[in-house]
Length: 489
Image (cartoon, rainbow, N blue to C red; front, side, top):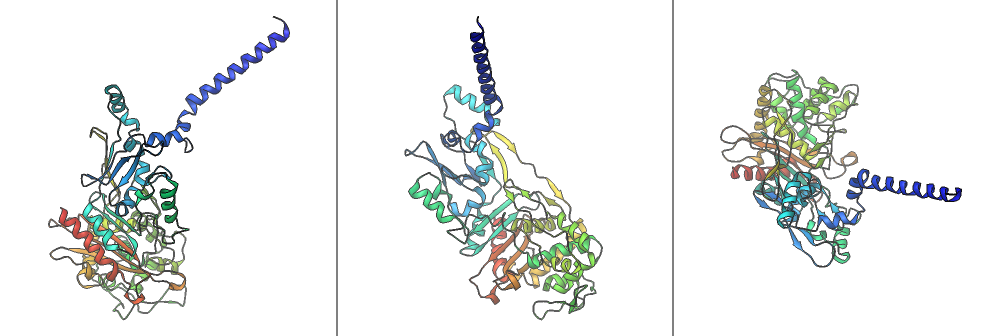
């Protein structure tokens, strides 16, 4: 072979080798990434090539699928009571992707999860049509309805938990949206519906999951955490003993007095009465006396400063770790930079109700294949122990006083022991906006255990300022949610 031909042959050989290397790289190294790439339209076509499995509540599906004939996507997602359940399900849209459970459990719902490989293979052999598996939630339908209807046309959120397991029983957020309105890919209907829900078009931001993703100043509901810190760190051993708490009380290193709301008996009040009347002076001084580090330790045992995955991600609630003494005092009454999700405050109430043990919150009980085989079963897990059982029971007694004869009387349920804490949190610069109304609570069953703990926050800018209170706006909603759970037992 002459020299020019030999060079051409070598060059062609190198080209073939490069092609083979590139082909193998794509097939074996990049295959998974390309298959799942957001711009790979085949992925979304495959996602809607068969009916999706369902998200289940109380043994019944709250989702469905309907066959279409107008596009490459054969099946479209449908929802039952979509607005009520949107904070749980999220959405699955042919045009806009998926969120929350619809996204996190997409593999099970489409049937493409690796754990369903044997079933897919068997169906292919037998000629049976592929269908997705189901996601069985921990949600209680009656509790969710009570939360959603209780919020009504007000802006706010509710989270309810089973203290003994961490199972989420209700997760409501208003205003909400119906995922069915943009589940397809029509420019005329789905895109228009989607656009109307975006924050730029709708300042109320109905697609924001306020129960998990919005953080609010907790106001006086945080005093339950401060009371726990006082008991756990030995600052207070007897809830009925007088504290050394002047009224007025000047915050340390300042000349600024910390005011109480209204004419309430807070001077040297016992911890029980301080919680009953919601004394800022007592709890501000408790926080300052304990100091930042002890307050931070207790707050973080309750879950602050850490994201929760239920499995949907919940924003981290914040208890500041860099504060001076007056800032610690303000943070200890739920002001300064303290901020929390409703889920986090439900966790606080649940830990107290569960004799000091905080269970990890979760809302998926099990994943199931098309043939109802259990693919994955959730096992409840202990997260931490913010209080000893003895101190938790002391705090329960204090919170029950709040409901029996304090600021939380509107949460009373006949023949049921209820504990709670109200809160009215400042909103805006110098508190010029309507405050947030909070209520956290738990209810005990006949055996003394607590099957439900609840947190409610209401952003009601329409109400008169003097009518906004945790006891007035939020407590009745919590009461209805607790009743719904108790009646379903």
